[in-house]
Length: 109
Image (tube, rainbow, N blue to C red):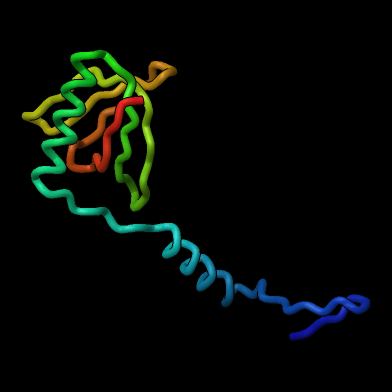
């Protein structure tokens, strides 16, 4: 329905039947799929993590969570190859535990 306010005309689409499809479209745009890393890329990530632990250096970790890429900057405290997890403290000493399967990229800060 077209409504006029002075010379400005606009469409009203705030109907409940329109809101749900619009939210679905926005949700699909925000979600991405997780990339598949091969063994060589995973080994490079583990090597970089081990170097960072040895040097006690800050790293940039890109990981995948809830269909989104996330960035974490901090020092790696622990790498557990048996449970395939990584424990990181950020600059505010907040401890985060990540699964190695979710880590996409690691670089030194």
